[in-house]
Image (cartoon, rainbow over all chains, first blue to last red; front, top):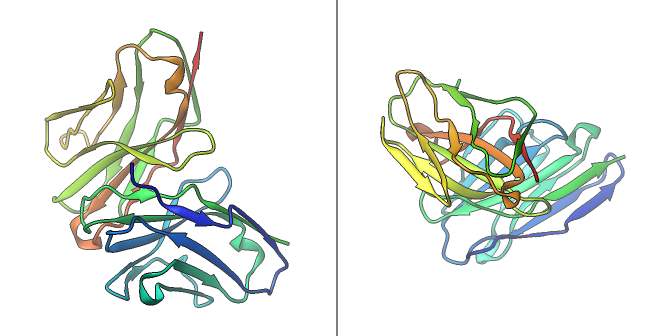
Length: 114
Length: 114
């Protein structure tokens, strides 16, 4: 079936550095999402993105976070600067439509901030 | 806000026996869809079941679930589990207003023993 790829699978960085998480969504999908999962906790919505714009962001989506998808390439999540509490697995997802559509998830990027 | 609550932690079932993973929810919205996602070890979460119709049974890959709005539940069931069903199962909801955002439960790990 359709696959979402995430690069890298693991990233270790020092607190205060910038990190960019990359997502290669399903090719004809129009809606894109980031979710955050801290170890042992549930996946939580961060942000969704459609037609080049953020549609909604949660309270977890701090000012240090940004997303973009320049020219239909990777859908990226950038954190600048990183903080210790940003350590988590970040899942990217994409869907053809918005409401109630199946979201296809990537395998996640495990981010460790030291 | 919306919330989803699942059976806590780990559920262990002997191969061939039935299983039910509980999922209850709270939402202020009437137009809502519900999902079960399954995540096998080292893989991405993928959709198992989806429903938005009250009292209608939905089935896929031997699993079934029925949305009961009267009890705010969307429990996942299987009559005879297999070793390959060992995975992490997430219940989630999406309401119309939030354009596809998924609210996840904490996940239930299902372990099947021979």
